[in-house]
Image (cartoon, rainbow, N blue to C red):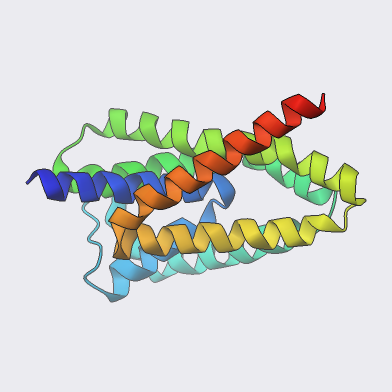
Length: 186
């Protein structure tokens, strides 16, 4: 039972963190995996994500976000607009993942908001720096890396949750390194 709880929490942490980079990639991954495999099961009301209509809308929103994030200035506007969307996606993913172990939905939602919101805040703070230091040339590269990390983290969170812990430690180390480097530069 304790191992199952740990794996479920690792999945929830991974999915919520991934939502901070791109709201729609982890939602779409969870929806598709739940719809087409037995790797993840969504209980009510989260099983609404498995509707083909919802999957289609998530797919369109994901493509739009991926494309917009490749354009300097538009990506900053997109980050501002997603200040509420990414934490909400994190809340949904955390609550949907932990619903099977009986974690209170409000506590799960708060955890998801904090995780996705924290990653989103770091991304939103870093993106204008990338734009300014690379004259916008680095934006598509950084955005592509963010999308890849979001996708890989989402899949790993469901398929191999133990690896999520390793990925989160690496991500936290990179963020701490980046913040320390930025402070020294000032």
